[in-house]
Length: 492
Image (cartoon, rainbow, N blue to C red; front, side, top):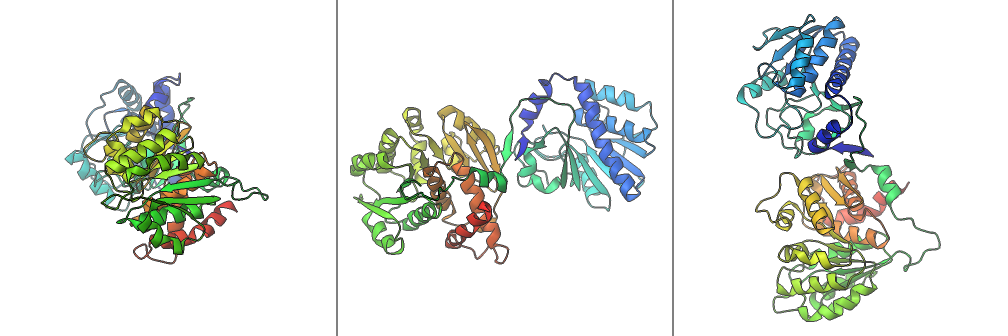
């Protein structure tokens, strides 16, 4: 399981590890220099240009330049932002000046074999200055091998945003831990191959973990050979409405494909009449509907009893966002003692009365897309830093959050995870309902990382289908149908 650091986590680790910061800079420079030397010696390259900023990332470059020069490599340092400004960078610069390093504050005219980016570090935000953008644009467009120090300049280390002229590295030498931006779009396109360098930081800072196939296999609930439907849990899905029948169908089918023993759909008569003939393994509870075709709040007491028999509850898919749904959600949260997964309209209703989370006895998982996450956090637009927003929401209300996106974050009291699986085949109606249903089904079987596992499995299914099909033509039913095969591959 790969551990990734945010800029804040990396800064904390550096400052609290007990090591001298100048020694860490020298170690970072040595690691960078070693990788540059390896490339030079392997490919018979001779001339190296280091683009250095005025901060500590530039200081890493100065330290590397000194080592490269002492190793006999023709080394030039281009001070892209002028003379160094931080105390550590200044010290590294003064040490470097004692060696045969060519230093310039103007764009060099000569050609180089390797260009190394040491301009901005993990704290960079916004757009590149125009002069730096021109420099990067030049070297990005010519035949030269490009190496980034820690993180490509132009990348926002927290959000994964990237300037269009970001330094496009063939490889990145990153210090201590991989950086979270390396797993996020569009920044991940600029890192190239990543080498993680040990620079002497000893820290108990816990970062964000990227799930891989083995992690998912080990976290899936075990299936005992003598198990029965009661062994594998009961999911109660409170979903659907006259207008949104498909949402209920996708959620229930995904829960059934998860391996749950029993899956019950609680919905209005219209939904159940439409779906019952095609979901023979499910059980149904018909509820009254209001004038708009949504589940009536008059059924609050019935649902309060139904959730008491569940091993997990899914609430929200296709339910509509109105007063009745809000009343029903409050009844579920007041009476459930099992995990409750809240999705879609359940989230939208919760946003208006989110403090009810503070009094529930249930373990709650919220599954917002970016705009739903914004509503839960009281923001007007989607947060650029989805991980930070999800983390703050999780800590404030003691809930788990599955913040959906091209890369999905799963934030829980037991640890934080990123799932970098899937493709645009999932950019279709029904994908969120499948994710919620699969999460609920895995939760009913006892999976602690149900949201993360569900996200990985659906992403894997989309990738598998796209080996022989275009993502344009893949629909939610295709994903559902391939789930048994994908689960088999993971379990093996």
